[in-house]
Image (cartoon, rainbow, N blue to C red; front, side, top):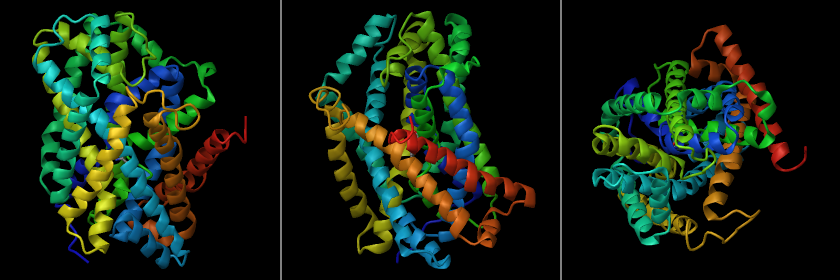
Length: 449
Ligand code: TRP
């Protein structure tokens, strides 16, 4: 077995895990999902899912990783052995690795959109752009497979380049400055949206208490997105936890990360919808939403080209640190088991994901109408399969393992919580989160209407 990396301090762990959690999920996906799923109904369920499912399961995933001190597959095998459970639990780790690669297949394509927008912003393409023009610019990007291919390739090379070097490559240190910078620039954006946009409409759209609008599909998407946004259910957090020292409080780390992650997403949402309503755009525009609305803001504010360039650079950075965590479980497994160097493993896996990404980018143009199943194209299948099935399933199994199979003394030892706090974690991990996930699955598979 090769030498394993370890975080230098709790801050590097926290920044790396926050770097994993904060990404396109917050800036690109959450805003458009809010619009597609009817606004506040989705937001309220999403927040509930973060509190009652996301936070406890993030603690669970970190504790499993730290106890195992291994990649997810061998780690689950080790924990299963320790708990005298079936060795088949290792496939939970295996499933996570595959899930991560499937997600990266489309993540990289969207990361490519962001990269191309850095250049567009810098070239001044957004200056004085109208809503219609901005939407047309984005459609033009989607209609150009070669441009998409170029940027997807760039994004993959950037990601695998870091992965090849290992987790302590110094990227986490950059996180230290860049995540706060992202928050700062977001506040500028929010300030601008507040002054020219329709913040009242945006606020009402996102937060009005209207439970009548909650639909089963919104609940399904909200739960899936809670997993996606916090990087849960596939082993990203588990593998990062496995590099974490023993003396760090898992609960405190989790709460900071979950708060920062959720706040960031909701702030982007507020800024975006305020622009959407002021410019009479459609809230339900789908995956192109931020690429159609943000240029309008950057195109009209003072210093817009500069601020826009910086903004898309920071988003690209956030996406980059997330992408790395999507492949790390698979790479850690290969390096710890096979006679393969980290660099070789990184480029081999990278190649496979890059090919998958090509299929995804074609699903925005040439293969748009190629429906794989249930009328969904390649991008949609990968997105739905991972967010609404594989991640919640992974989370459910982790919760069951940690709650029912692992010795109570072991989980208690890892979490190091007071008696009351431990009981709260146990209640959410053992009962509330599993029931929520199972209910969603029963609906999803049509067993309950
Ligand atoms: N959470 C990241 C985002 O919001 C994406 C991500 C990274 C992820 N690692 C993950 C999603 C693991 C699910 C599982 O952009």
